[in-house]
Length: 210
Image (cartoon, rainbow, N blue to C red; front, side, top):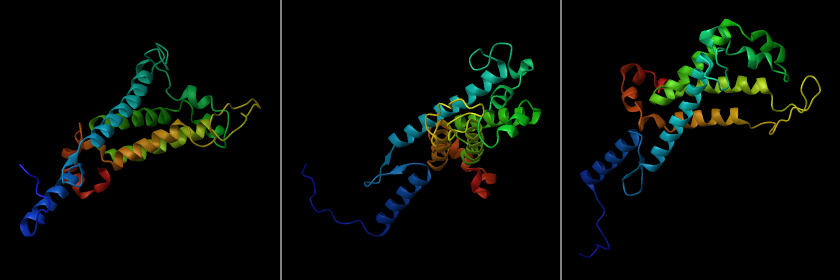
């Protein structure tokens, strides 16, 4: 069967229907290609990135909560009476907020805020819902952790070398950028509950909750 070399342009209802179909696919999180089809590779890629990032936050939460013997030693978890923030914040040794972080170390409000942040961001990423609030909270958390490590410092407060590998862009900045990317994508509509979440009346009336 020969291919038609000069197909007639679609007009009227056919063109409108095709345009609506493409728009609907794009609204559902699809990537519309030039022939009106939806590419799935970018959607699945961002979904994988979302799930991997969720695992990062959730692992940190559970390890600090139950002391799985990795970053948090066995018997030193939050449920055992340990403080998720004491070790990190009390060890801050550079930057303009050094004394502030020392004062916060081990405070109950700091422990709760940190742990709820880890859990909330992890659950949002894993389920694919509320990615914009998660990105906002995650960016704030990463900014504070960046300030605590203070990569711009060449020397610590005791005069020893900081051994900073990059004075500006470290893994905290990259995590924040990933969170923003996932929220904009939107990555929660593939292998997640993003579409169902977006249809809720509360979310439809408050688009920042997407």
